[in-house]
Image (tube, rainbow, N blue to C red; front, side, top):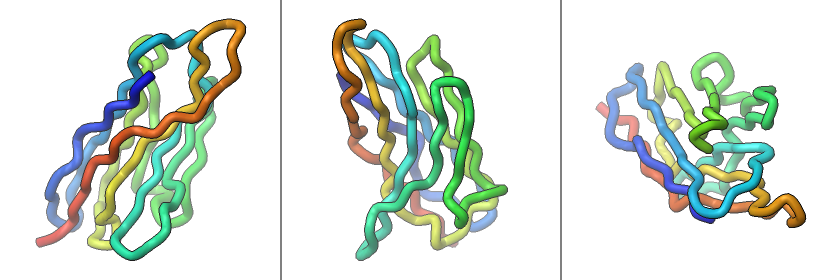
Length: 120
């Protein structure tokens, strides 16, 4: 199983970006799908969570600006980021709990990270 994140880049303050992360490999089901970020010199922090049923939760710093969504048919999670600020600059990682077979446990997987830079 692999998670492949993409969509990062350079954007001006106030701008928008949409990240996506696709899971591939032997997948029976996916539970929670999450986005984390890590800024230089800081600890990794949880940005947003979406359950298999679509329930969402957000970190306080992104509430009202970021929206997490998922397409279960495509095994993909998205992060729509609006009103971006310089402090949103970080490497963004996707994360998911995935079960490969009906008889196996859920395992936690990480994507490789995609860099988001917010600067004028």
